[in-house]
Length: 442
Image (cartoon, rainbow, N blue to C red; front, side):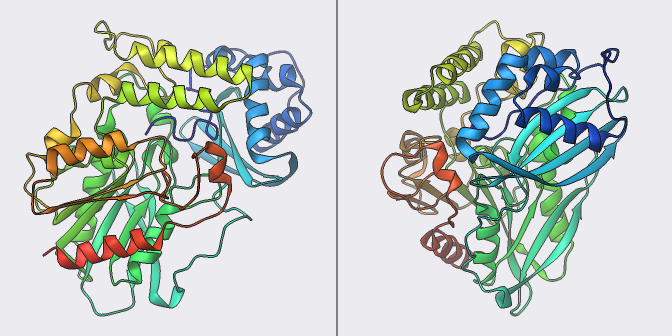
């Protein structure tokens, strides 16, 4: 759910450009972004923010930029070096990714530039590949991977179809990520849970389709919108993925499944109302409570384990904005600046009143609902919500894994955000349970 990557992703909304500040700047976006990174490393936050546009300056003045950089260093370790820089142009915007090595992991520092070469977007995220990845337990000989382009009204999304090497046609699963501009592997820190699931399920003769989220590939389509909802963010592309699989002769179109993790799992009942031919639905750490309550609980927990007063103050400010989501006066006209970052009022209003478990109870298709016992982001309270609504149904299976966290990776003790820096893999028990359930669901 939202704030799952609070310590990893720092989004800033795009806004209209203002005239350039009087300073000597490189002309090319790549050089501008590299200069910005160098200024962050030198902790010259005044210089780093000098080229921000009005919206970014308001969201990240020098003092807040310093707090963000400190969070990055606390989590990823000291900066080591720049590794590579890539540029992608979309419309009037240039998106620059500067991949950097830190002591504990690699991060992508993503900078958006408008037509006046002002910084109109900035966020930090785990690098697409990390030097700290653990070995993948699935054997490559058990599958092959095919690049795909998922069509959509706002442009195609890149993805990967993982295909077993056995007898066709195969049952297939579409994977839906949690919140945020996630990549197809759902990379969090040094971990790639969706890659684990794709490779593990392929070893069980199940094809898997995963793709980069639209907010990652086309952020500019969302950052200026005041009407975006989860339909544009998640649901339309999920339906496109199912349509793509139905057109393939190597896929058994009568045995299509959808697996949603976190926000993706929460939205599955809503998707099921529209996709009645799907054979079954798999929910991993999906919430059943109102989104505002979940955000407040997450922020309260993060504050309780933080040792930084500055961080606690920032979390308190975010908690106030999350409380605003419960205000009956919330309307489409409510400024996004008064709400949790990353989405306008339309997004939150679209989800207000949505009761995932109650909707799931109206769907007669099979459900598999899995929950990690150490998950602090979507907790066992949500799992109980699924149980109360669905446990009596013979075509619903629910299972709790006491040692697993939000990523379904094993650990001990209280789960904390820094845990995601340690490379690991989705539990083989989870992969086996999913594969067995799919095999038994006809």
